[in-house]
Image (tube, rainbow, N blue to C red; front, side):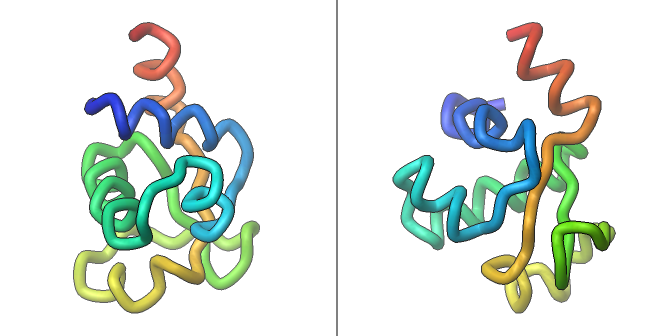
Length: 85
């Protein structure tokens, strides 16, 4: 986990929208997308779409089309890694 990914996980103890994450982390949308993709591939976060209550499994083919309308939350594994770092 990179320092930026660690900072993103700081914001994901509660469900957060892409827009909120971008504002809170100060990351440009393209950079945030890249880091969210990495965190999803590692199983450290979960994604939700079209609302914060509907979990959506990570799919490489559709990620780019919906990422900016999605919500995110740290997974149990993500919280464990975040807290033991």
